Figure 1: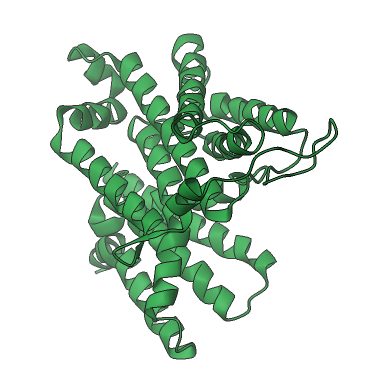
Figure 2: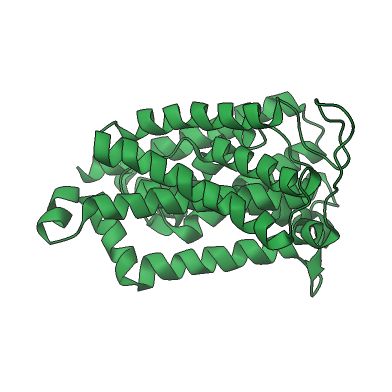
Amino acid sequence: MNGTLFKFSFRYGAIVVMAIVLVYFSLVNGKFFSYGNLSDILRSISIVTLLALGVTFTLIVDGFDLSVGSTMSLSTVITASLMVWYQWPLWIVLLLPIAVGIAVGIFNSILIVKIGIPDLLATLGAMYIVSGIQSTYTDGYSVYSHMPMTTGGTAPGEFYNSFLWIGQGELFKIPFPVIIMILFVILVYLVLNHTRWGRILYMTGGNSEAARLSGINVNKVKLLAYTISGIFASLAGILFTARVGSGQIDSGAAMLMEAVASVFVGFSFLGAGKPNAIGTFFGAALIGILLNGLTMLNLPYYAFDIIKGSVLVLALAVTYLQIKKKA
């Protein structure tokens, strides 16, 4: 009986919790289930979902990337500065931060694959380095239109309307960030579940030695996973900048835990038992709904970390109990 209950909890627990949360918040606040509020929830989780998709790739290869938050922050301030400080064209504004994300991913891969530093320690070190770079680059200030410069005078540029539309605009009455999020979730799902590269990623994470003996270049696969993680962190930074209209320093730090929690909640989505794109999106949605509902209940913002931490601990407990049970 206990085994059956645990299996049910592992497979459907997250969905049951989601249903309970939706019903509860709908009953206590009539505006919760309105189109406007649900649209706001989806818009808010679009950034976290992109960040979490990058973490998903590293967890698939049995790694972990703690540097995604600082990479997102660096991408955010670079994106903003290219418009506000240098007034460069939009295509450079979009591509250069992605190149920076690729560079961070490659740097992580060198530390892990070539030098042999454990993933957690390597990306922890990278997190501090990247965070220091973004603080040094901006002199510790956020970047916004016509801001005063430390060297004197004001910045010559401002945010382009075409850029701001990416984070604030709508297409067919659907927020554009939501469309971007859904497209990337579908793309990652197709890659992981219906391509040779997806199978190789899962094989590498499942048993790297067996994958190596079968002819897979494990180091190359890990390099790919961490590079993709850097790209998604940069995309999250670009989308965040377009949404808020400024380059806020350390903006990604607060989203790191949400992204990690989203991935681990996704482990148990429909009993997947592994990192997966749909589960990651579902995990981000669950956390987004919780935070939105608690905000509508006027819960103090400083209590939100308790909720985030509790969700993460619960997701980890269910995941590792299942692993232990299988072993």
